[in-house]
Image (cartoon, rainbow, N blue to C red; front, top):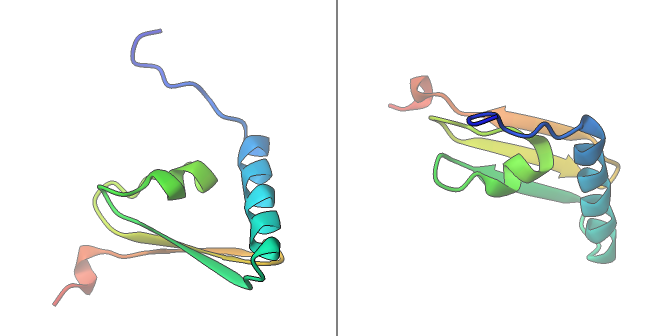
Length: 78
């Protein structure tokens, strides 16, 4: 068992998104943007189970539940 992470079912993430959308409605928000990078990824991981190991990422969630994830790459750097 050592080294194995517990599996979280997809339904749990759907429930978390639904709860977030309910909170967005209470606050009259049309969109929520969740930023993540190597040091600050907990909010993105909580909602999506994604962890941007080496780059930045953003989740854009609208009030109807539509989601887009944007990932940066080092190729974008100048």
